[in-house]
Length: 140
Image (cartoon, rainbow, N blue to C red; front, side, top):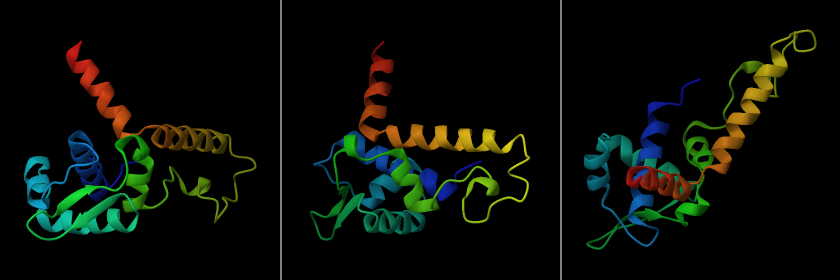
């Protein structure tokens, strides 16, 4: 499983804003430049993250993009799913089209467990915690 490039860009943009803090704004041009995200791609990402309630945008001289909530309240899962939709490791675990072999397949429960663990990890990982962990690792 690999997230889309768009989801990766969204994660980088939110992480950049999280490092600034929840009360700071950044111009999309600054985010695009510093995070190496194509500006036209970033505009679409910002729009999707705004609709999902993760970012706020404002126009004008003092405008820009900011987090809609504290970095400690925004999870990695929320950002990825705002862009890519629900995460499924395999078709047999998506729930809406059950695999005809799931009852006898020895791998099906493994896919289910792996997906459950991945979603749990992404759901429990906030941008605030990830940034603090990175900063403490740098200081050590």
